[in-house]
Image 1: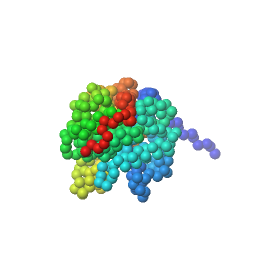
Image 2 (image 1 turned 120 degrees about the vertical axis):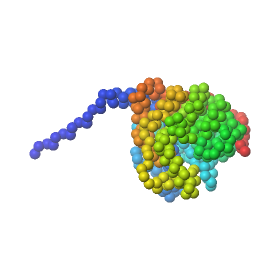
Image 3 (image 1 turned 90 degrees about the vertical axis):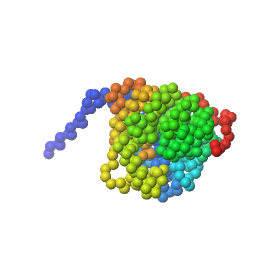
Image 4 (image 1 turned 180 degrees about the horizontal axis):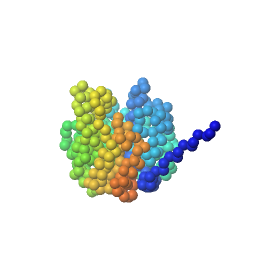
Length: 411
């Protein structure tokens, strides 16, 4: 009996591909990814509801299973994929719906608790961070620095006291609106009321800057973007937005706003959301929203809209990594290489671009930019350097206990 022939060895990578992979690896060793927005906390809460638990409960065993890749099916984020994606720091969104019957302040605190429990369950892989120095310390320990971001001014319930309390709990940015207007600012996806910030909105921005909370201008109307940039004393951020010149949807940032970022020092963190980066997907998404409204579904009801989408016949258009590259390069072209970052919005969407399927795929994006001639300095900047610079600028104002400018409600 003769021995079976040994299997042929796997082909060696082409020299150019190997050199590119080595370069990307060295870059991400020096500066890991700092991502502006991940909705894992709410995705875990939705799963708890689907599995029959109370709405505010996320089971400990589900959080524990995130240590194993794809052990919680349907998610874009878990610890092994964060490691493969070379994620050094993650802003975890503590978004809650702005819907009748939901107490947004209580729900936001519950979402902060979900993130804290996630970190506590995996102390060898994650650690809470508040300042840029915290991020550097945590990353040096080999863990992912975990920061908190609020998505929507409804989360403070019209109270500057609630805003300060969220900051004391570690929240480092607040997106001024989500998909609907708040009493003091217009959303990009709602009918304009204030045509910018109201006087109360100006007070919110001033108080955020006073206590060291970053002003996040994703989701707001273009008029709010311009208004906030006129009055801002500190760099702002867009935690997850695209370039409107590449895809003309209200959620993206117009060129004139991008042009104002260098003077402010802020950063636009390019999102991967298909309906924001692909015009074809955007058109399909708008048609779906119209169908949902016709069926009586509140367009703010994410799960309701997704149910309508699932029933639509025909092939759904898809976004790609190349679409995201177009947006990244437009932001760099208009705002400059020191004003662009990454905000994937993983686990906040039901589909992701081809080539950027989950949080393990950031190196593929960095490689695509490297192939297009980006310098090492510019790649380190987009990977995380720009975001850390903006965070550090807000660290200068981080004493929540100092005398309050306004003790109470905005109304």
